[in-house]
Image (cartoon, rainbow, N blue to C red; front, side, top):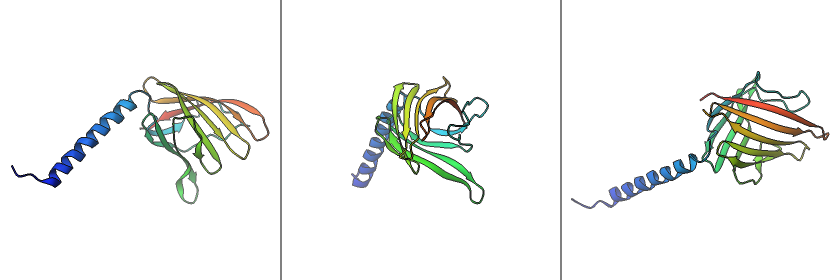
Length: 164
């Protein structure tokens, strides 16, 4: 059999990719992943009118491997249709990363099926949430406190249903 450097390189690359995938899968299995599309269940959510406006469009989580988290909350625009509105790219490390246009957000695991999320803005509002997943990962329950720029605190529950 003739030695082919290119074939050997490709085989080694494929092996490393498979090994990397196995390692990522192991990390994934420690925590429930948000990956997928989610929509707010208005009937099960309880958000006071003086708190924030709950999104009516989907949130798409493109990456959640237990360490890295990337998502976009979309909004419907009458002229252009569904548009990305609030992007987030960060980690479950308790550090703040840019969130949307005027805020920052941090995420920290509490257990394999829950995490804490804290958001704040220089405009004066903040959120402090505990998020828990249903056993079958089809619902995400957010229990939080919203502090408006006027200092008023509102408790809320926001329930998200998984679309895919």
